[in-house]
Every structure is written in structure tokens, then in C-alpha cells.
Length: 127
Image (cartoon, rainbow, N blue to C red; front, side, top):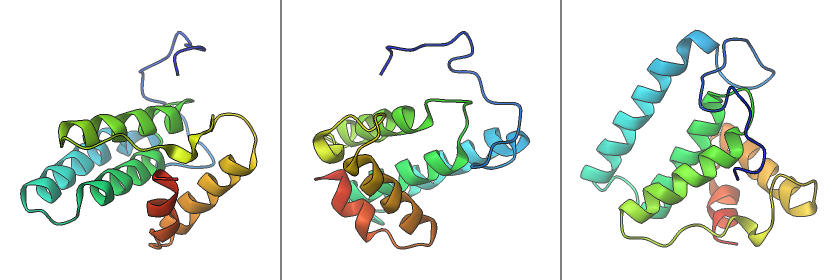
């Protein structure tokens, strides 16, 4: 994950991208996401896997960084699972930064989740 770290690593993006929300909305969207996750956990709204998968999807959709958002979001989802005493996701058991059929499946699952269809993502994270 940290093989290619740029000088701007960890700093929010300041420009628009072809995906993600407007840059000025990033801090507010992250706060709302964290508040939602806290609520889901406290109220057992979803099972832990679903909480982590939904968290991952929303974090990717926010797209807070110029690069590395998928890697960051996958690591954050795994840390969230561990905080709930759950096993980390398997994420298709391949490197998702390299072009592959597995990466295509991952992107397709995220796009389906964009349309509120999370089943592919729920299946993928444990594949």
C-alpha cells in the first residue's frame, strides 16, 4: 500500500475529479460518514460486514485524495472490521491496483453500489 507515497499523501484534494464530490465538501462528508458508521454500530443497523462494505463504498465515493482512494478505503474498512472484532475482508485475494479481471469485478461492484445495489460488493469483499 505504501510503495508509492507522494509528497501530498494524506492531504485532501483541492480540485475536481471525474469521480468524487466537490473538494470543498470533503470534510463535511467525512464527518457525516463517520457519524453514520457510529450510529450503525451502536444501533446494530447492519451486520459488521455490511457496515464495513457500506463505509468503504461511501469513502471511495467521497474520493478525498488525489490518488490512492481505493487503497485507503480498503485499509480503513479492514481497520473498521478489526475494531468490531471481525476478520478483514479478502478483497478478491488479488492486487486491485493492477488491471485484472478481479479489479474489473471490484469496479463493477462499486458501480452497482452507486445505484444502491450492494449485493455484488457484499459478495466481492469476502471473495
